Length: 428
View 1 (tube, rainbow, N blue to C red):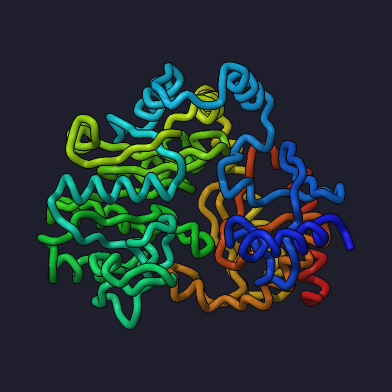
View 2 (cartoon, rainbow, N blue to C red):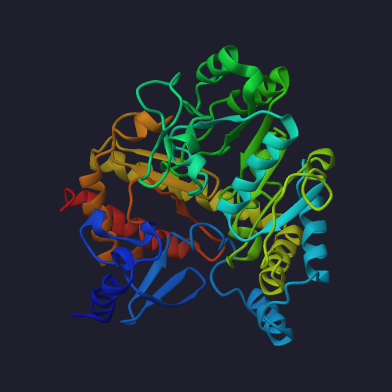
Protein backbone atom coordinates (compact mmCIF):
# COMPACT_ATOMS: atom_id res chain seq x y z
CA UNK A 1 0.00 0.00 0.00
CA UNK A 2 1.45 3.39 -0.98
CA UNK A 3 1.47 6.53 1.17
CA UNK A 4 -1.56 8.09 -0.56
CA UNK A 5 -3.66 4.98 0.12
CA UNK A 6 -2.48 4.88 3.74
CA UNK A 7 -3.29 8.56 4.20
CA UNK A 8 -6.70 8.07 2.63
CA UNK A 9 -7.54 5.24 5.02
CA UNK A 10 -6.73 7.59 7.89
CA UNK A 11 -8.49 10.55 6.26
CA UNK A 12 -11.85 8.77 5.96
CA UNK A 13 -11.90 8.32 9.75
CA UNK A 14 -11.57 12.04 10.46
CA UNK A 15 -13.00 13.82 7.38
CA UNK A 16 -16.26 13.14 5.50
CA UNK A 17 -15.28 10.98 2.55
CA UNK A 18 -11.64 11.55 3.44
CA UNK A 19 -11.58 14.94 1.71
CA UNK A 20 -12.26 18.59 2.43
CA UNK A 21 -14.06 19.12 -0.86
CA UNK A 22 -16.09 16.60 -2.91
CA UNK A 23 -14.23 17.50 -6.10
CA UNK A 24 -11.10 15.88 -4.62
CA UNK A 25 -12.79 12.51 -4.18
CA UNK A 26 -11.82 9.86 -6.73
CA UNK A 27 -14.53 7.31 -5.94
CA UNK A 28 -16.44 8.12 -9.14
CA UNK A 29 -13.47 6.95 -11.21
CA UNK A 30 -12.81 3.89 -9.08
CA UNK A 31 -9.64 4.95 -7.30
CA UNK A 32 -8.43 6.97 -4.31
CA UNK A 33 -7.01 10.50 -4.16
CA UNK A 34 -3.34 11.22 -4.65
CA UNK A 35 -2.08 13.17 -1.66
CA UNK A 36 0.01 15.98 -3.07
CA UNK A 37 3.20 17.03 -1.32
CA UNK A 38 4.50 19.74 -3.65
CA UNK A 39 4.13 21.33 -7.06
CA UNK A 40 6.35 23.19 -9.50
CA UNK A 41 5.62 24.53 -12.95
CA UNK A 42 3.28 22.10 -14.74
CA UNK A 43 3.90 19.24 -12.31
CA UNK A 44 2.47 17.83 -9.09
CA UNK A 45 4.41 15.49 -6.80
CA UNK A 46 2.58 13.15 -4.42
CA UNK A 47 3.62 11.73 -1.06
CA UNK A 48 5.12 8.69 -2.79
CA UNK A 49 7.32 10.85 -5.00
CA UNK A 50 5.32 10.21 -8.16
CA UNK A 51 5.20 13.07 -10.66
CA UNK A 52 2.09 14.11 -12.60
CA UNK A 53 1.49 16.58 -15.41
CA UNK A 54 -1.19 18.73 -13.83
CA UNK A 55 -4.32 19.72 -15.76
CA UNK A 56 -6.26 20.91 -12.71
CA UNK A 57 -4.05 23.79 -11.64
CA UNK A 58 -5.78 24.15 -8.26
CA UNK A 59 -9.01 24.45 -10.30
CA UNK A 60 -7.80 27.30 -12.44
CA UNK A 61 -5.73 29.95 -10.70
CA UNK A 62 -2.27 28.61 -11.54
CA UNK A 63 -2.16 30.29 -14.92
CA UNK A 64 1.56 31.04 -14.49
CA UNK A 65 2.25 27.49 -13.31
CA UNK A 66 2.83 26.24 -9.79
CA UNK A 67 5.23 27.99 -7.40
CA UNK A 68 6.07 30.87 -9.72
CA UNK A 69 9.16 32.37 -8.11
CA UNK A 70 8.00 35.99 -8.14
CA UNK A 71 4.67 35.04 -6.54
CA UNK A 72 6.31 32.89 -3.88
CA UNK A 73 8.79 35.67 -3.05
CA UNK A 74 5.96 38.18 -2.59
CA UNK A 75 4.13 35.77 -0.27
CA UNK A 76 7.25 35.11 1.83
CA UNK A 77 7.89 38.84 2.17
CA UNK A 78 4.27 39.45 3.18
CA UNK A 79 4.36 36.62 5.74
CA UNK A 80 7.40 38.16 7.39
CA UNK A 81 5.38 41.31 8.05
CA UNK A 82 2.49 39.34 9.62
CA UNK A 83 -0.13 36.86 8.48
CA UNK A 84 -3.27 38.84 9.24
CA UNK A 85 -4.15 42.17 10.81
CA UNK A 86 -7.91 42.49 10.54
CA UNK A 87 -7.23 46.07 9.52
CA UNK A 88 -6.88 48.17 6.39
CA UNK A 89 -3.65 47.77 4.40
CA UNK A 90 -2.01 49.49 1.44
CA UNK A 91 -1.80 46.25 -0.54
CA UNK A 92 -5.60 45.81 -0.65
CA UNK A 93 -5.92 49.32 -2.09
CA UNK A 94 -3.32 48.40 -4.71
CA UNK A 95 -5.27 45.22 -5.54
CA UNK A 96 -8.58 47.09 -5.81
CA UNK A 97 -7.05 49.72 -8.08
CA UNK A 98 -5.54 47.00 -10.28
CA UNK A 99 -8.83 45.12 -10.67
CA UNK A 100 -10.69 48.33 -11.53
CA UNK A 101 -8.03 49.19 -14.09
CA UNK A 102 -8.09 45.80 -15.77
CA UNK A 103 -11.85 45.13 -15.86
CA UNK A 104 -13.72 47.93 -17.70
CA UNK A 105 -17.10 47.11 -16.12
CA UNK A 106 -15.74 47.49 -12.57
CA UNK A 107 -15.51 50.90 -10.91
CA UNK A 108 -15.44 49.65 -7.33
CA UNK A 109 -14.59 46.25 -5.85
CA UNK A 110 -14.97 44.50 -2.49
CA UNK A 111 -12.56 41.72 -1.47
CA UNK A 112 -13.91 38.56 0.14
CA UNK A 113 -12.49 35.11 0.88
CA UNK A 114 -13.88 32.76 -1.77
CA UNK A 115 -15.84 32.58 -4.99
CA UNK A 116 -18.85 31.28 -3.08
CA UNK A 117 -18.78 34.33 -0.81
CA UNK A 118 -18.34 36.66 -3.77
CA UNK A 119 -21.41 35.28 -5.57
CA UNK A 120 -23.54 35.23 -2.42
CA UNK A 121 -22.64 38.88 -1.78
CA UNK A 122 -23.22 39.98 -5.37
CA UNK A 123 -26.69 38.47 -5.38
CA UNK A 124 -27.57 40.16 -2.11
CA UNK A 125 -26.35 43.44 -3.60
CA UNK A 126 -28.40 42.93 -6.77
CA UNK A 127 -31.51 42.36 -4.67
CA UNK A 128 -30.77 45.42 -2.58
CA UNK A 129 -30.19 47.59 -5.63
CA UNK A 130 -33.30 46.51 -7.54
CA UNK A 131 -35.63 45.94 -4.59
CA UNK A 132 -36.53 42.56 -6.14
CA UNK A 133 -36.07 39.01 -4.88
CA UNK A 134 -35.96 36.54 -7.75
CA UNK A 135 -32.83 35.52 -9.65
CA UNK A 136 -32.28 33.41 -12.74
CA UNK A 137 -29.45 30.89 -12.95
CA UNK A 138 -28.67 28.29 -15.59
CA UNK A 139 -28.87 24.54 -15.17
CA UNK A 140 -25.37 23.11 -15.01
CA UNK A 141 -23.76 26.39 -13.95
CA UNK A 142 -22.23 26.27 -10.48
CA UNK A 143 -21.97 29.42 -8.36
CA UNK A 144 -20.80 28.08 -5.03
CA UNK A 145 -22.57 26.21 -2.27
CA UNK A 146 -24.73 28.94 -0.72
CA UNK A 147 -28.29 27.75 -0.07
CA UNK A 148 -30.10 29.76 -2.71
CA UNK A 149 -27.90 28.54 -5.55
CA UNK A 150 -27.91 24.80 -4.90
CA UNK A 151 -30.75 24.31 -7.33
CA UNK A 152 -31.56 22.03 -10.26
CA UNK A 153 -34.19 22.70 -12.91
CA UNK A 154 -36.78 20.14 -11.85
CA UNK A 155 -39.38 19.04 -14.41
CA UNK A 156 -39.32 22.17 -16.48
CA UNK A 157 -37.84 25.61 -16.90
CA UNK A 158 -41.00 27.30 -15.69
CA UNK A 159 -40.77 25.60 -12.30
CA UNK A 160 -39.14 27.42 -9.40
CA UNK A 161 -36.00 25.88 -8.00
CA UNK A 162 -35.90 22.66 -6.02
CA UNK A 163 -33.09 22.29 -3.45
CA UNK A 164 -30.25 20.15 -4.75
CA UNK A 165 -28.80 19.33 -1.33
CA UNK A 166 -30.07 18.02 1.97
CA UNK A 167 -30.20 20.74 4.59
CA UNK A 168 -31.38 23.44 2.20
CA UNK A 169 -34.93 24.54 3.10
CA UNK A 170 -37.29 24.89 0.17
CA UNK A 171 -37.86 28.50 1.19
CA UNK A 172 -34.23 29.32 0.44
CA UNK A 173 -34.66 28.45 -3.23
CA UNK A 174 -38.20 29.59 -3.91
CA UNK A 175 -36.88 32.74 -5.60
CA UNK A 176 -34.30 30.92 -7.72
CA UNK A 177 -35.46 30.28 -11.28
CA UNK A 178 -33.63 27.90 -13.61
CA UNK A 179 -33.12 28.45 -17.33
CA UNK A 180 -31.28 26.50 -20.01
CA UNK A 181 -27.76 27.64 -20.86
CA UNK A 182 -27.53 28.87 -24.46
CA UNK A 183 -31.32 29.13 -24.71
CA UNK A 184 -32.54 32.74 -24.54
CA UNK A 185 -36.17 31.68 -24.91
CA UNK A 186 -36.14 30.07 -21.47
CA UNK A 187 -34.87 33.33 -20.00
CA UNK A 188 -37.44 35.41 -21.83
CA UNK A 189 -40.25 33.17 -20.59
CA UNK A 190 -39.28 33.85 -16.99
CA UNK A 191 -39.18 37.60 -17.57
CA UNK A 192 -42.50 37.61 -19.39
CA UNK A 193 -44.06 35.79 -16.47
CA UNK A 194 -42.53 37.74 -13.56
CA UNK A 195 -40.02 40.25 -14.92
CA UNK A 196 -40.81 42.91 -12.31
CA UNK A 197 -39.75 40.46 -9.59
CA UNK A 198 -36.39 39.43 -11.09
CA UNK A 199 -33.37 41.15 -9.58
CA UNK A 200 -30.63 39.54 -11.64
CA UNK A 201 -29.48 36.92 -14.09
CA UNK A 202 -26.29 35.16 -13.03
CA UNK A 203 -24.27 33.19 -15.54
CA UNK A 204 -20.87 31.63 -16.11
CA UNK A 205 -20.01 33.37 -19.39
CA UNK A 206 -18.27 30.13 -20.31
CA UNK A 207 -19.98 27.28 -18.50
CA UNK A 208 -17.07 25.46 -16.88
CA UNK A 209 -18.82 23.30 -14.31
CA UNK A 210 -20.45 20.92 -16.77
CA UNK A 211 -17.18 20.44 -18.59
CA UNK A 212 -16.57 23.41 -20.86
CA UNK A 213 -19.51 24.83 -22.81
CA UNK A 214 -19.01 27.99 -24.84
CA UNK A 215 -21.79 30.54 -25.18
CA UNK A 216 -23.47 30.43 -28.56
CA UNK A 217 -23.08 33.57 -30.69
CA UNK A 218 -25.51 36.19 -29.37
CA UNK A 219 -26.30 34.39 -26.10
CA UNK A 220 -24.43 36.73 -23.75
CA UNK A 221 -25.46 39.84 -25.70
CA UNK A 222 -29.03 38.58 -25.57
CA UNK A 223 -28.85 38.31 -21.78
CA UNK A 224 -27.50 41.86 -21.66
CA UNK A 225 -30.44 43.14 -23.73
CA UNK A 226 -33.09 41.26 -21.75
CA UNK A 227 -31.73 42.55 -18.43
CA UNK A 228 -31.69 46.12 -19.72
CA UNK A 229 -35.27 45.79 -20.99
CA UNK A 230 -36.59 44.63 -17.62
CA UNK A 231 -34.31 46.61 -15.30
CA UNK A 232 -32.54 43.54 -13.91
CA UNK A 233 -28.81 43.25 -13.32
CA UNK A 234 -26.52 40.91 -15.26
CA UNK A 235 -23.94 39.13 -13.11
CA UNK A 236 -20.96 37.37 -14.67
CA UNK A 237 -19.51 34.65 -12.48
CA UNK A 238 -15.89 34.86 -13.61
CA UNK A 239 -14.47 32.71 -10.83
CA UNK A 240 -13.05 30.46 -13.56
CA UNK A 241 -12.82 32.73 -16.62
CA UNK A 242 -11.62 35.90 -14.90
CA UNK A 243 -8.03 36.77 -15.90
CA UNK A 244 -7.77 33.40 -17.66
CA UNK A 245 -9.29 33.97 -21.10
CA UNK A 246 -7.64 37.37 -21.18
CA UNK A 247 -6.58 40.16 -18.88
CA UNK A 248 -10.14 41.54 -18.97
CA UNK A 249 -11.79 38.14 -18.54
CA UNK A 250 -14.65 36.63 -20.51
CA UNK A 251 -16.39 39.99 -20.68
CA UNK A 252 -13.48 41.35 -22.70
CA UNK A 253 -13.16 38.14 -24.69
CA UNK A 254 -16.83 38.31 -25.77
CA UNK A 255 -17.35 42.07 -25.65
CA UNK A 256 -20.25 42.08 -23.18
CA UNK A 257 -20.30 44.22 -20.04
CA UNK A 258 -22.09 42.83 -16.97
CA UNK A 259 -23.36 44.99 -14.12
CA UNK A 260 -21.56 42.93 -11.48
CA UNK A 261 -18.68 40.47 -11.70
CA UNK A 262 -17.44 37.87 -9.25
CA UNK A 263 -13.92 36.45 -8.99
CA UNK A 264 -12.25 33.68 -7.04
CA UNK A 265 -8.78 32.43 -6.21
CA UNK A 266 -7.14 33.46 -9.48
CA UNK A 267 -6.88 37.02 -8.13
CA UNK A 268 -4.93 35.63 -5.18
CA UNK A 269 -2.47 33.61 -7.22
CA UNK A 270 -4.21 30.49 -5.91
CA UNK A 271 -4.55 31.62 -2.31
CA UNK A 272 -8.01 31.74 -0.63
CA UNK A 273 -9.59 34.95 -1.91
CA UNK A 274 -12.54 36.25 -3.88
CA UNK A 275 -13.99 39.58 -4.95
CA UNK A 276 -17.07 41.17 -6.46
CA UNK A 277 -17.33 44.49 -8.21
CA UNK A 278 -19.27 46.64 -10.63
CA UNK A 279 -20.58 50.10 -11.29
CA UNK A 280 -20.01 52.68 -8.57
CA UNK A 281 -23.70 53.44 -8.10
CA UNK A 282 -24.34 49.77 -7.33
CA UNK A 283 -21.28 49.11 -5.20
CA UNK A 284 -21.89 52.16 -3.02
CA UNK A 285 -24.90 50.35 -1.60
CA UNK A 286 -22.50 47.99 0.20
CA UNK A 287 -21.89 48.69 3.89
CA UNK A 288 -20.55 50.80 5.48
CA UNK A 289 -21.63 53.30 2.79
CA UNK A 290 -24.99 51.73 1.98
CA UNK A 291 -27.56 49.42 3.47
CA UNK A 292 -26.47 46.08 1.95
CA UNK A 293 -24.52 44.39 4.72
CA UNK A 294 -21.47 42.27 4.00
CA UNK A 295 -18.37 41.81 6.14
CA UNK A 296 -15.33 39.56 6.54
CA UNK A 297 -12.60 39.62 9.16
CA UNK A 298 -10.05 38.10 6.78
CA UNK A 299 -11.17 39.92 3.63
CA UNK A 300 -8.25 41.58 1.89
CA UNK A 301 -5.76 39.36 3.72
CA UNK A 302 -2.33 40.90 3.07
CA UNK A 303 -0.65 37.61 2.15
CA UNK A 304 -3.32 36.72 -0.41
CA UNK A 305 -3.29 40.28 -1.74
CA UNK A 306 0.48 40.17 -2.21
CA UNK A 307 0.22 36.95 -4.23
CA UNK A 308 -2.64 38.33 -6.32
CA UNK A 309 -1.06 41.69 -7.07
CA UNK A 310 2.13 39.98 -8.19
CA UNK A 311 0.37 37.51 -10.49
CA UNK A 312 -1.99 40.08 -12.03
CA UNK A 313 0.86 42.55 -12.55
CA UNK A 314 2.88 39.93 -14.41
CA UNK A 315 -0.11 39.19 -16.65
CA UNK A 316 -0.81 42.88 -17.17
CA UNK A 317 2.79 43.58 -18.18
CA UNK A 318 2.93 40.62 -20.55
CA UNK A 319 -0.20 40.58 -22.73
CA UNK A 320 1.67 38.26 -25.10
CA UNK A 321 1.31 35.53 -22.46
CA UNK A 322 -2.37 35.19 -23.31
CA UNK A 323 -1.64 34.94 -27.01
CA UNK A 324 0.98 32.28 -26.31
CA UNK A 325 -1.27 30.31 -23.95
CA UNK A 326 -4.37 30.41 -26.14
CA UNK A 327 -2.48 29.46 -29.29
CA UNK A 328 -0.83 26.58 -27.46
CA UNK A 329 -4.22 25.47 -26.13
CA UNK A 330 -5.87 25.66 -29.57
CA UNK A 331 -3.22 23.34 -30.96
CA UNK A 332 -3.42 20.96 -28.00
CA UNK A 333 -7.19 20.55 -28.02
CA UNK A 334 -7.31 20.26 -31.82
CA UNK A 335 -4.70 17.50 -31.60
CA UNK A 336 -6.87 15.75 -29.02
CA UNK A 337 -9.77 15.77 -31.48
CA UNK A 338 -7.52 14.45 -34.25
CA UNK A 339 -6.43 11.54 -32.05
CA UNK A 340 -10.07 10.62 -31.50
CA UNK A 341 -10.83 10.74 -35.22
CA UNK A 342 -7.76 8.65 -35.98
CA UNK A 343 -8.86 6.13 -33.38
CA UNK A 344 -12.38 5.93 -34.77
CA UNK A 345 -14.16 7.60 -31.87
CA UNK A 346 -16.73 10.39 -32.26
CA UNK A 347 -16.33 11.88 -28.82
CA UNK A 348 -16.35 15.62 -28.37
CA UNK A 349 -13.60 18.05 -27.42
CA UNK A 350 -14.87 21.46 -26.32
CA UNK A 351 -12.51 24.30 -25.52
CA UNK A 352 -12.38 28.05 -25.06
CA UNK A 353 -8.88 29.43 -24.74
CA UNK A 354 -6.94 27.36 -22.21
CA UNK A 355 -10.10 25.73 -20.82
CA UNK A 356 -11.06 22.38 -22.31
CA UNK A 357 -13.01 19.16 -21.83
CA UNK A 358 -13.14 15.76 -23.51
CA UNK A 359 -16.73 14.48 -23.45
CA UNK A 360 -17.35 10.78 -23.94
CA UNK A 361 -20.41 11.34 -26.10
CA UNK A 362 -21.16 11.58 -29.81
CA UNK A 363 -23.63 14.39 -29.10
CA UNK A 364 -22.52 17.98 -29.60
CA UNK A 365 -22.34 19.48 -26.10
CA UNK A 366 -24.03 22.88 -25.86
CA UNK A 367 -25.84 22.70 -22.53
CA UNK A 368 -26.44 20.60 -19.42
CA UNK A 369 -28.69 18.01 -21.05
CA UNK A 370 -26.24 17.29 -23.87
CA UNK A 371 -23.34 17.15 -21.40
CA UNK A 372 -25.24 14.52 -19.41
CA UNK A 373 -25.28 12.19 -22.42
CA UNK A 374 -21.61 11.48 -21.69
CA UNK A 375 -20.53 7.94 -20.80
CA UNK A 376 -19.14 8.45 -17.30
CA UNK A 377 -17.89 4.88 -17.09
CA UNK A 378 -15.81 5.42 -20.22
CA UNK A 379 -14.44 8.61 -18.70
CA UNK A 380 -13.56 6.78 -15.48
CA UNK A 381 -11.52 4.18 -17.38
CA UNK A 382 -9.75 6.93 -19.32
CA UNK A 383 -9.04 8.96 -16.18
CA UNK A 384 -7.53 5.94 -14.40
CA UNK A 385 -5.29 5.23 -17.38
CA UNK A 386 -4.05 8.82 -17.59
CA UNK A 387 -3.40 8.98 -13.84
CA UNK A 388 -1.51 5.68 -13.97
CA UNK A 389 0.69 7.16 -16.70
CA UNK A 390 1.46 10.41 -14.87
CA UNK A 391 -1.27 12.76 -16.09
CA UNK A 392 -3.35 14.36 -13.32
CA UNK A 393 -6.97 15.01 -14.31
CA UNK A 394 -10.02 16.08 -12.34
CA UNK A 395 -11.90 12.91 -11.29
CA UNK A 396 -15.11 13.90 -13.05
CA UNK A 397 -16.38 13.95 -16.62
CA UNK A 398 -17.92 17.35 -15.93
CA UNK A 399 -14.85 19.33 -14.90
CA UNK A 400 -12.58 21.47 -17.04
CA UNK A 401 -8.94 20.96 -17.95
CA UNK A 402 -6.70 23.95 -17.26
CA UNK A 403 -3.51 24.69 -19.17
CA UNK A 404 -0.86 27.01 -17.79
CA UNK A 405 2.07 28.92 -19.22
CA UNK A 406 4.30 26.25 -17.68
CA UNK A 407 2.85 23.58 -19.99
CA UNK A 408 5.52 23.48 -22.68
CA UNK A 409 4.98 21.98 -26.11
CA UNK A 410 7.08 19.01 -24.99
CA UNK A 411 4.83 18.42 -21.96
CA UNK A 412 1.67 18.74 -24.04
CA UNK A 413 3.01 16.33 -26.65
CA UNK A 414 3.85 13.82 -23.92
CA UNK A 415 0.25 14.04 -22.76
CA UNK A 416 -1.07 13.55 -26.29
CA UNK A 417 1.14 10.50 -26.76
CA UNK A 418 -0.25 8.87 -23.60
CA UNK A 419 -3.77 9.64 -24.78
CA UNK A 420 -3.11 8.30 -28.26
CA UNK A 421 -1.73 5.03 -26.88
CA UNK A 422 -4.91 4.60 -24.86
CA UNK A 423 -7.35 5.24 -27.69
CA UNK A 424 -5.41 3.37 -30.35
CA UNK A 425 -5.33 0.36 -28.03
CA UNK A 426 -9.12 0.34 -28.06
CA UNK A 427 -9.48 2.01 -24.65
CA UNK A 428 -8.03 -0.88 -22.69
